[in-house]
Image 1 (cartoon, rainbow, N blue to C red):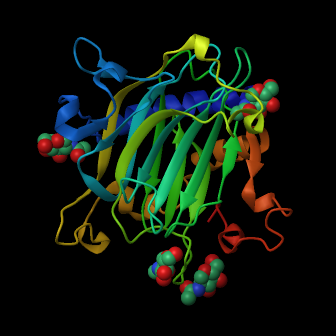
Image 2: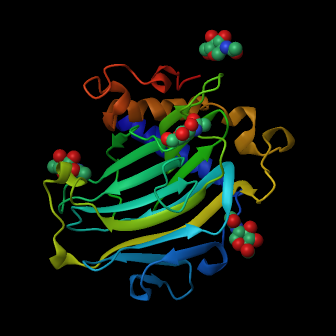
Length: 295
Ligand SMILES: *[C@@H]1O[C@H](CO)[C@@H](O)[C@H](O)[C@H]1NC(C)=O
Ligand SMILES: *[C@@H]1O[C@H](CO)[C@@H](O)[C@H](O)[C@H]1NC(C)=O
Ligand SMILES: *[C@@H]1O[C@H](CO)[C@@H](O)[C@H](O)[C@H]1NC(C)=O
Ligand SMILES: *[C@@H]1O[C@H](CO)[C@@H](O)[C@H](O)[C@H]1NC(C)=O
């Protein structure tokens, strides 16, 4: 295991250098690209405007969303999560077709489930198509996500959706080569983030309650980074055959051989829950679970 860690640390460093030349980081002000929904008191930025702080207390949480919609691309952000006793607190970072839990929404989720001091955070991912989710996976991380900023990214094209943590693929969600009801690829999505109280389910299944003595709970964000296709209503854009973007090309349709090594390390060591393996909940294995993430 130690050598695997060494492997992907080295690998990640190389990849970071490789990608930094092609990425367009958003260095404007928050208001250029986002709108927020929270009381003024619950949203702060650093003096230079580049770090954003969302806070949760007993009265309110906080969230923001992009002004722009996107269809396919690479979506990335650095987050530093609530530290200390954060049981019950969930920070979400996700893409969704709608502002609200509409019954026909598509959604790609990262959710960070807080914990008691010293107990591990869990990262939960989920995929919704036309309002149907129930495709949870849960992972532990190989670092403490409250100590420093780490990068959480989504690669989305017509062939696959990959969830990355610091450039390590932790989840691969494949499309099929036939019309299906599980792969979101028709509708453009906004990117969202929010912090809220979820102590009815989040930590040890809801057993651990939020300790409000520790409020406010604060999550920090920086380096929002999109290399994707902006969707311009009312005309459908982002037609893949006419674009030459790396995230839409053959090499991005499947994991690279180095990514496969990292992914297999994650599969062996970090997966806590995989709905595809939950035969009690799904006596009939969901259709997408038969697709091969290695192809
Ligand atoms: C952010 O906003 C600016 C100004 O409206 C726009 O030009 C740019 O494309 C936006 N960036 C992203 C990643 O959507
Ligand atoms: C999406 O879901 C709605 C309601 O759940 C259903 O009526 C509709 O047929 C579905 N659309 C597709 C394209 O499957
Ligand atoms: C779809 O993919 C499967 C598995 O990779 C393959 O066996 C099959 O031939 C493919 N079908 C079409 C129509 O390309
Ligand atoms: C919180 O810590 C407990 C005890 O270590 C662990 O069982 C659980 O998976 C952790 N995370 C969550 C979200 O419950």
